[in-house]
Amino acid sequence: MSKTILEVKDLKINFKTYAGLVHAVRGVTFDLKEGETLAIVGESGSGKSVTSNALMKLIPQPPGIYASGQILFNGRDLVPLTDKEMSKVRGNEIAMIFQDPMTSLNPTMKVGRQITEVILQHKKVSKADAKKRAIELLSQVGIPFPEKRYNQYPHEFSGGMRQRVVIAIALAADPKLLIADEPTTALDVTIQAQILELMKEIQKNSKTSIIFITHDLGVVANIADRVAVMYAGQIVEYGTVNDIFYNPKHPYTWGLLGSMPDLDNDTDELLRTIPGSPPDLTNPPKGDAFAARNEYAMAIDYEQEPPMFQVSETHFAKTWLLHPDAPKVPIPDAVAKRIEGYLAKGAQEND
Image (cartoon, rainbow, N blue to C red; front, side, top):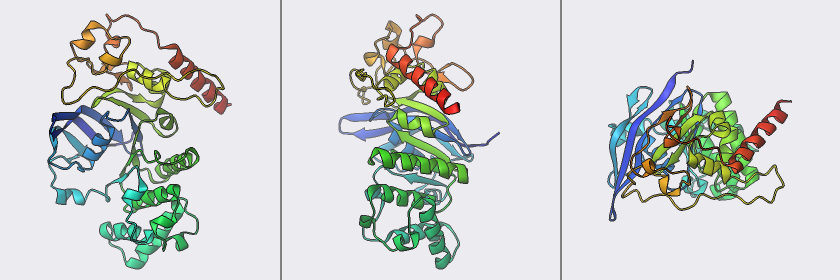
């Protein structure tokens, strides 16, 4: 049984703004085991990136406020730590891969030096050993001619190669947890697939735990063990990849699955969209935050926030549709077709 490396309990993050207090993260709870990949999925503004930045204590205070909750990393609560104390955790035990590699890299410094600096900061090694390790890392993340590339600047690399350098920097101090915040969004589809393959390889070889932040459920199927679906600052569905893809329970998850393009079928079927837009979190809605966009919403959805119902040992969803007295609503046809497609594809791959 893998040990739990991270436990997030009832995390609430607010921001003071001119428009009022924004309740960006509203009671998020999840855990992560050693060597596991958890994907956090949701539209822009759902609270995914705020959650991931909160784990690293990268939210400036003010305007950010850690209103409540715990972030237990190997049993130690990170929330009360000072910036100086957190600097020993960042990069060393928890590392982050950001969305845009150009903002993560120093354009005036050779990439090799950017990697060796991280190694020297966190490991007691000589400069020669740090250089050797940096070249190994460049090779490990799939950069050809690493000895030559070590002495080049970021502008001499393509977008995909720059993201590989960022991953090498994140791995430099052998972190226990890697947080990847939309690491493939700025890349084309082919390079995206290569970076995802690389991350799967890293996890397999180093047993690093990964939190993968994305708005794209399609990315999740190939990389994650478990999925947390976020909406309006809350986790609304939580389960294994199979739970979420083959047995989704929350109407928001149905919407995300139904709006994914199906590249395997040459149908002229129009993509479904989720009507409306996320709520204003300076004034969060009274009941279910998704009610105004949910075609299956009931009167109670506008009055009372649903609890997290347990579907199975691994699967939970925050929707009144799971209440024993709720009407039985079938999964929308577009989502049911998508699930049939996944099952058929999975059967072919297993043959």
